Image 1: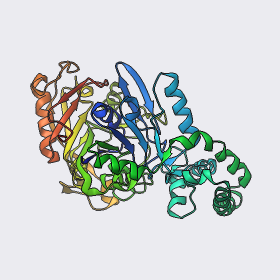
Image 2: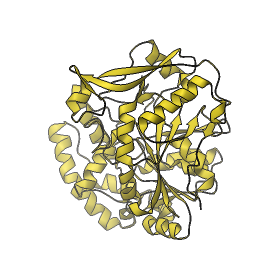
Image 3: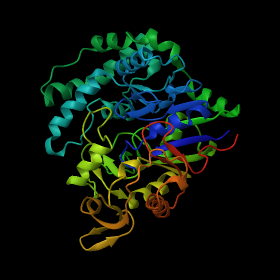
Length: 430
């Protein structure tokens, strides 16, 4: 059975968790292949809201095995806090499996993240301060600590010593902070070893054997396309590859085994943190989208910046990821707006672009060129088929599909799992 990838097509917060949860009853494994506890999902199940940060949304589906893949950086304190919260609400977390090759976010990573952001001042990136970037820097710099290292105290101590030799120089001499003691970190991490051990497996073998058994493996990317360290609005990005190709690396599943790549697209655009945003609205409509859409970051509590739908971004995301399907979310938020703009081009110093500009400078200076469609006032939250939507809502969806060059296979019309219009089946036949 081929694997399926879910990817955010904008700057995150598109509703990937809901899409995963929607498919949860029909898949066997849900894998988080990248990121850490810096990228959250809000999932509403039968009116009950769950805010997930490190755990994949598949943990809310009883028959699914949720997996934290090798590409994730794991804050162990956050992991066990999230597990405890879910258990207190009656969610079975015993099925969770974690890659032995996943890297660990240590407390010194979080310290470095926060002091670096303050040091950057006006050039700050707007990170969550959770140590994700520094942990990935250590991974690439071969100074990282992996989950498996917690089961060998001698190896763990050597690795912590190696990492802190450099970190303490920075903390003391550049940032005027106290040095971090090796034993303090070793004890901190070893305290989790016994609780962690039953969850840790060779996830690459497990997932590939599952595919050989004709089971469905869904990879749920954290963050989104334009936060990708290679393809996003650099440097205002995350430190991993939350695109479809990155999912293969972060889960250990070869690209030839992937059959569907599903892009999650919000019916308007939002982003959290700093960075360019051509269609951003700093007027009553931006406030309307923020309030009506409940646009507040799951992890940060920060209000999301809001703007109209950007068709150039989505078309480019379709190409980068090879989307086979799009799930359009939060269409209901646009209800009541008399005219709904769609960005179909950029004006950059008098030159009109109908595709994403090549350089960050051009993107930063882009002024949106809008096409306006008539809105709708009818309540669409009870619509369950495309023909149930008002004519103007259907026209809006059809235009977005045309501009994207990819079929829209599902439409979210409310926050709950059931508040969805299915146009095409998102999963391949078994």
